[in-house]
Every structure is written in C-alpha cells, then in structure tokens.
Length: 307
Image 1 (cartoon, rainbow, N blue to C red):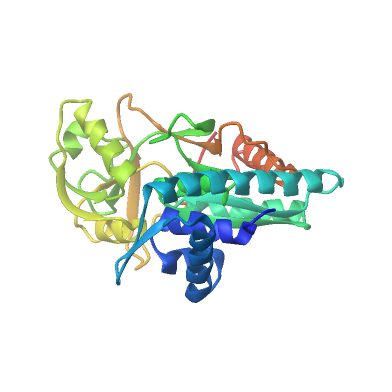
Image 2 (cartoon, rainbow, N blue to C red):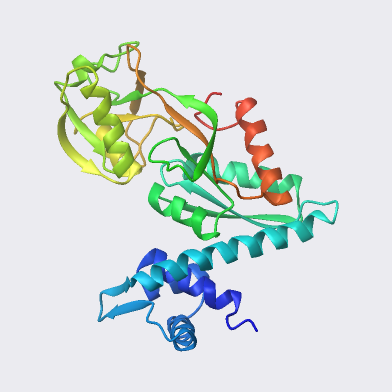
C-alpha cells in the first residue's frame, strides 16, 4: 500500500530545498498550513522526524529528512518521466515543462525563448523559473525543472551541460567615461578604475579570476546583485562594470547612456548552455524545448548573444 501522495512528497522536497515552509508553500502554490500539515502527516506515518522547526527561523533538515527528501525527489522525477512518456503516446508536443534560467540571463533570453516555443507548440507551456545557480541545480535534482539555461560554472558531476554559445567578457562604462571612446580596453587599464561588481556568487568569482589570471587586483568600489542597479551606477559615473551577456539597449533605466567595449586579450569566456540532470530521460516537451533553444542559438536569435 502506498502511504504517501506525490503532493506530500513534493511538499517535503521543497521544504528541504528551501529550509522554509513559507518558501515551500510559495513554490508549490499552496497555503502554509497545508504544507505544514502534509509534512507532519508524513512524519507521523514514518515515525521519524524529518525537520527541526525553529520559531520564525525556518526549518533544519534532519539526517533522516535529508535521505527521505533525496529519495522523494527521485520518485517525483520518475513520476514526471511517466507523465512525459504518456505524452509521447500522442503526436503533439503538449503539457508543461519546467525551465530554470540564471537570474542574470532570464530577462534577456527567457521570455523570447518561451514565447517562440509556445507559438510553435500551442498545447505546451513553459514554466519559467529565474534563480541563482544553486537554486537552479536544486530544481533539477528535485524534479521541478526539466532543464536549465545557465553558464558552465559550479556544475557538479551529476549535471550534463550542452554549450550553446561562448560569451567573452565585456567592459561597461558611462558614455562620458575617458575610456568609452576606445575600440577595446585592457584589464590593466581597468584595474586602476573603480569597479562596480555584480555581487552574485559565481559571477563575482569569475570576474575576479579574469584579473587574477593577469596578476592584477580590481579596485572594487561598489557591489550589487541586481544588474539594472549595476547599469545605473555605471551610467551615473560610479565606475565601470563587467558583463558577458549584453542587453541590446545602451541605456540604464533612468535614461543615462552606457558604452560597452570588448576587453583586449585572450580571456576565459562564459559558456551559455543547457544543464540537465545526468541520466534523466527527457519528456517529449522538454526535448522539443531543448531543440528550440539549439535552433535559436544557432540562428543568432538570442538577444545580445552570438553563437
């Protein structure tokens, strides 16, 4: 006899991923009491405590809870595969597909890819989730995401990565900056200027590594995890910044002008691609979306990104 529903297992997995009933409830679009009651029901059936509750501070996963969440995630992935297999019995691409997109890429490429795919396949729907790399990988492992659009940074052995495009580093400057009229700029010149750093875990490490490879140390003046804030700070003269995926507009949200220059020299590019969980059988809809991404990249139809 099966003692748990798939919904209960999903609640447990999301709570383990987020460390919070509140965040888990938002992810699964259920109320907090519903999620709490479902988790408590699973614990009663098991006779084992899966989480330690902290007042106003979320949840801690017990060792037993960690093991159970991992196995529950596997069950959810197999259930998704079964559902996808059922869809392959029909000729049309249909049903939802969960797609993660790195938060810095999502505004640039997510809506265009999803919109183009849904126009080609009206019976299918993309559930786009923008996130950081750690959360994206957790979504793949937990079964919420079929694939992720991201960079080849911080990937573990259980994740396959298919490159779509290489994005060399670029310098972003205010239009009136003394270096803005140049055709390109070297890191040795930038190192003496104040850097407005994109303060996300993998991004900041990557950008600092560019300088380290040249024996340089950047002068970090300001930080922000939000690209539009970075663009506004740069456009208003607080320093320069670095980026890989270039928006098609050279203005910040407040209308201030920007200039984007290639960085002289040979530097490690970011590789944009498709991340999937190794060994996971793809549904027909997920496969079709993957093909759509390949075609868009090959045709140069991703804003600011060349194949």
